[in-house]
Image (cartoon, rainbow, N blue to C red; front, side, top):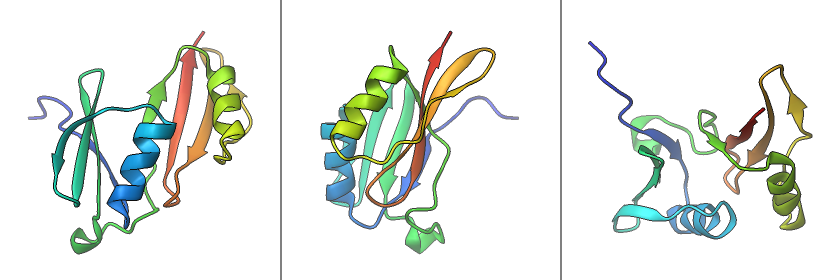
Length: 115
């Protein structure tokens, strides 16, 4: 029986570079770190982790599962673009707006705003 979501994890080759991106660009704060191979961030009670998943068969740069809620998705998109981060155009659905961001390793995540 599933009792909850344990974590979301992205596979990266360069953990230090990915840590810097998720801290300095995305704005996350590390909650737990294991040397240079695994970093966890607490995102509103859900753990988002980065580490090299190659030994587990998870190819770095192939992840797409996380979507982060933001206050103003258009403003966040413009901020990321100004930093040179690849971001798609805004997409609208009946209930939200979203865009998709690519990290330095090639992993994709979403930024999202409920209407």
